[in-house]
Length: 111
Image (cartoon, rainbow, N blue to C red; front, top):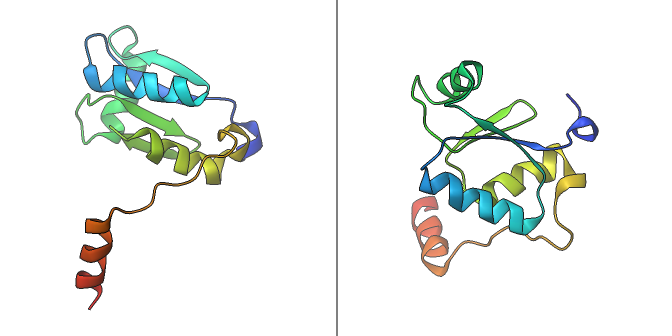
């Protein structure tokens, strides 16, 4: 599938999931269009999630093109969108930069 044909992030969720609510709010705030799939209402949607989450029904699960992400952050979702569907990326969005601790750890591990 090409990026120009992607019109929305596929968002798999279930009622009562706090992680789902948090990611939903963050993506809504960023203006990311989502097609929402309640895995408790459709067994086929639950099967998709299980196929991506080692047999578990772990949500939120996001699918963009041929990439599945289990419990991603909004920044991780937008980072994938930037390569798969750049027309959906919010104007002015910049990828997150590593923290000072992350920079130090990267230097230590690369030596």
